[in-house]
Structure formats: C-alpha cells, structure tokens
Image (tube, rainbow, N blue to C red; front, side, top):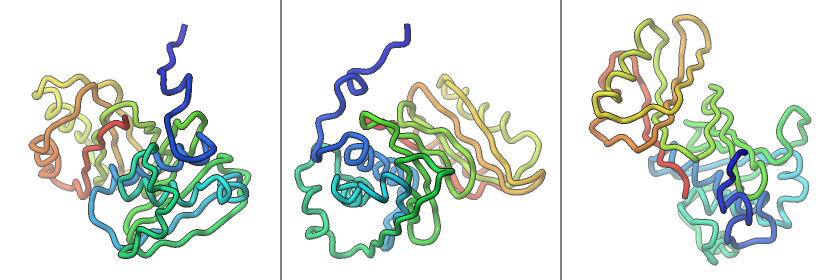
Length: 217
C-alpha cells in the first residue's frame, strides 16, 4: 500500500481558506525561490484556469508572491503581503487554457527564468517546466538541477561527482531542445549535496546554469 505523508492526509497548517489555492500557491513560490536563488527585482505571475478565476478570493495571488519572498504557509503576514512588499515590482495575468492544469502558474523572474508549476491538491505541488525544459519536481527530494549544451558524457560526469560524495541518486532525468542544443538535467537525491559539489558541476565545460534545490518542508 502506498504510504501518504501526514502533510498529505490532513493538509498543511496554513493561512488561507484553500489548501490548493493558498498553501499550494505559497509552496509554488517557495520552490521557484529555491530554484532561482538570486535576489530579484521583478516578477510576473501568469495564472491559469481555476487559479485565474477563483484564486483571487482564496489569496492565490498573495500566496505566490509571499512564497517567492520566502514566507511559509503558516505565516500570518501573507494576508497583508501587498502592504509589506515595496521594493519588488510584481504583476499578474489571468488566462484560460484547457491544456494546462486547473491550478497552474508561470512565474517569470527578472525576465531571466520561467518556472511553471501546478498545485495538485492538499498543498502539494509539482514543477513541470523550467525555462521551457520539462521536469517533474515536487519538493520531496533534494534536487541538483543543471542546464548545459547537449553533448556525450554529461550524465556520467555529473553522476560521478555525486557518487564520489557517497550520495545516493534516487532518480535522474534529462531533456533537450535538440541534439547538440540546450539541455537540462535534474537529479533527485536522498541528502543534499554541498556547495563544493555545485561548484564542481559548474566547472564542467558547457554547463551554464546549476542550482541546488532543497526539498520543501
């Protein structure tokens, strides 16, 4: 029998009326923050379907922004986040698109990175794309993410660096735009890698982005 976490069974302790529209929104913002990691001055949220039509009343807009700024689902300041945030430029767009999940969002940070994700219920989330590359990251594992120019041997070089640290790889997935084009790889890990591992991966020729994503609590 599949075991569910206590989080999934009783839903999160949270601010807001809806686990999918409020807590899920906060956690999507938190995951985007974990992926981007840098300071930012501008963000645009594109909300789809139910997020777009009913999210306003459930605080989805506030939750997404609060999560991106590092607030957790139980922080009472989320309901007043628009009064708190002054130094960040933020905007929202609302779209109906039947090809997208009912509770879906694109988070565009500083016009440099787009993180697309879904709130799938009970506060659980899934990141489905990063800068157009397909992923499936739900925050349950520590994850090493890199983007690079596609070439032979990249998987073995990255996995060798990780295994030398005696860290177990739970899963590894790759995507690419075309042979020899831009590619991505994300590696789910039982324990987080240190920044020394991140630096070693960054030093691999033709790797142009790498980040160490901590799992969500």
